[in-house]
Image (tube, rainbow, N blue to C red; front, side, top):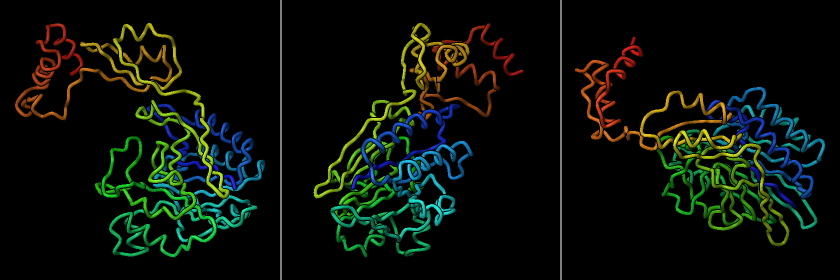
Length: 364
């Protein structure tokens, strides 16, 4: 049985002021070709289908078209769960209709099992959507303190006969009480420890994980994050995005197929005068200017050449978090005096007469 592992689609996501829907459709079309060419039997979607709990109509249509193509035209099955970005209850609307058409969605239920067969026998699928600790305490057990406690309860009645596949959305870690710094993903809890003990998954034949955007495995190659199919932040610039195929026979075989982006993500660090001489680019761009003095309306100028310019910062900007670096008496100084102090700190020189006149006009 051939499984295609997807997660963290984040349909409807934006970067800066730009919608990524066209980029997402471009990648999803590649995935449809992979499903067809690789003769995939079941598509697994391990949560965060949408970027928000209430997606707009355009995002819903992109996902609906993707699902329709898989189940009606390609005649394949889908098992999908909700993630921490999704509304589980909304995803399960028309659940019985979907299941009659080979689309099995689990947004709010966490104790179900699906069984399918191939020439090697049965394969049991356990879909466990994202469950908040607050909900777990209220509906499952008030003694639950962390995600390891939660999964110990959710998995306790599995006998692991035949082949077994888990689809879930969580932060599985080799060291469950040590959170690593995770960029680009919304935390599962506020101020708590998100990690859970990945050792609980070792008896499964394959574990399709969602939540982390970087593709990697935890403890064992069969316990995998497939990662996002495209880049969603500038922290992911150096990552190659792909989808994962798990072929469940006597021995598990794993294959990754790269997905090409419509528009890539790039960082450019240089002087403004050098940047404006560069070739035009459609990539999503983060600019870091080396200039000592501020440039007048830099984003307006850059967008004429780079239509997907996302953000601009200065390499030598002030570390505002360092309270000792900039000590200004905000209560007893005028707005002009405060800005003069700021200017002196930033530029290492006093404001000139022209600069003062300009700032006076701004205040007015």
